[in-house]
Image 1: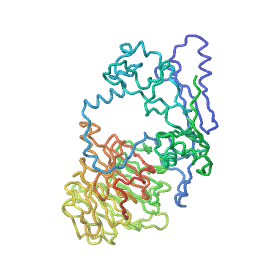
Image 2: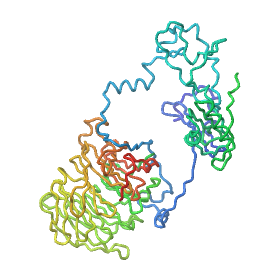
Image 3: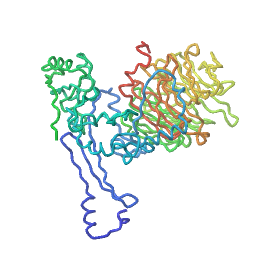
Image 4: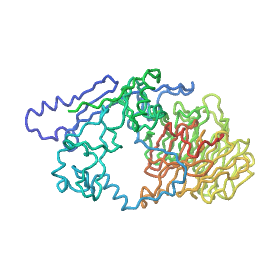
Length: 288
Length: 334
């Protein structure tokens, strides 16, 4: 297949040789990464990166079952090595079984038009969003082009968020209103402006930084734990991006500062999952 | 849950069966081959080669020692599960449509097709478990021809000397194994062909599926219908979920009309119905054709489905399946 590519210079040959080896290494988290280079039918070079994590599952089985696992293969499988063969055994795509009451037969097939609309909106077509005010027009036609452009750049990163998930999408601009419209997300960002922010913005929520939590603590566990003090607005658990294992810290936002204060006093030094929690006010990230 | 896809067959599946412990899964299809797989990882342990026609049916004994199969080449074969060797061959004038072991592994019942001037017959063979199993008697212990509609499925109920059958007319009946006399019958159990019959673990009740789009749970002793599950497609298979209050139904429209209807309309999904409330509680997609056969792991931790598309899909249930209580906490004793 390699012959299909047109060689333009002798240097490419060398490059080919170098890359065809690929890489194979195991990192600290036990994730094995293999990189392969292949050339597809169109003569294009492909880089295939596979990340594989192995977890060992142990189970107790009956003697008869354990014995059967040692049986020699026979028939068409005769002499093949143990382990599933990719030619006959593959893993399918994840399917979901959600058990809910009520007959599913009542669900009607979506009409063709609806299906078309759904695919369109999925592909992002047919929906225009202005980059400046998030309105449903083209950016070039935005009425606030001159006054708002560039404000986006000075947006502060969300406080107490180390891995930084996406900022809350700005609300759609309200129709009408005599004064110049400023989207809520921009409201106190203007020079010298100090308008109180909308209460819902999570940047303003009293947030506690919880450290020394165990690796397998989930959002729901913390929500349950801190929910006893008052309404918890948001829980974020820091995780390793590759393994999904907790990094030992979390942020818990409350709706009320007094509640947060009380929770901090109570929970700081509290034993949880055989570890002693450390709860502090979260410090907003340094401004650039 | 991520299904394991088993691609050991080139043609549509006819029957799949778990063994007693659920670690082995047997599958047979129209391509003459019987496969055996490890259910936990989908590894193929081996194949049983020898039949020269569609293998319609298989059954395995409780010790996973013998496998019996029935085929369109007019043969019923006994196999060694471990080695894949054919131990014995019985020949009949017509195709074998259904085989089933008794609960003590001592007997096998088989149904042969009604064709070419031959009557459909039900035969019961004694299986000798001595030595290596190659010494079997050619003559059946008993044989009878059910009058009227021909039998399509059969099994041993918990009562001694009885055979439970499902018929082409939709009839479900109990026959005396020795005299061939029809002891009890429910003529109106279904309105069309009974396509599958699977017993509960203690054989005191059983579920049947039918082309009349319904599946029904019957009491083994009285043959009264206990529950009815009304679907919108012809059903090919139905199974009771052990330890959980569900039944799993599979079907889809006839193979010949598949190309003329959309995939969505085809309803090639395994359907989970609540056993008590007779309502559908969930669906699992995956097959590209009608589901021909469904089997459940005896511990209820997994189920497998075989389709007209030639695939077997093994699904190990997630935690959520065991925790889900769609109708609240209802105590159901199995």
